[in-house]
Image 1: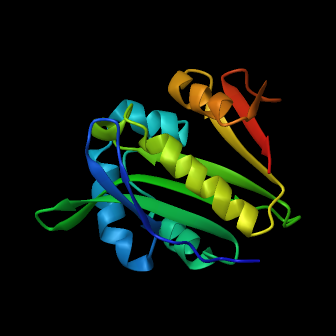
Image 2 (image 1 turned 180 degrees about the vertical axis):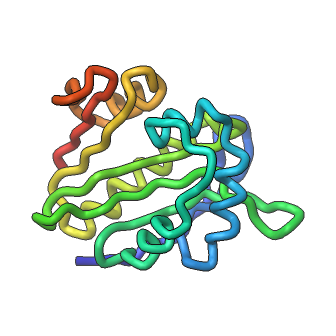
Length: 173
């Protein structure tokens, strides 16, 4: 199992450069700022409900779990105060240690320019290196952009068993 992640830079379709790297505990303040910049609709799509404040305790536990029990990566750009996080992708390894659940967020200003695809591809590669054989994620049926991306990346998409508003996206790695 390899929990390492190699940083890299990408140029988005609109010409902006973004740096992609593993998330760090020191990113907490930037993650809070990124959450604050999310629209209400983006928060709803990501968290599947109305969330007005980040759950810092949960974030800290997640950061502490990496890389042994998952992976978190962030996309950053230069900002007046250092950096801004404009996207993130995570997966958490299931109890069987062969599957994981993903989540992804991209800032509205960076949506539609290929960042989500770059983040998901990097996340899939990291999961493969960690020995994961299946990745899945729960996506609102209304989140058509995420469902299109999942299809393009080879995920199968099925209705959620308990909620018709949710789709389960699965990829054999």
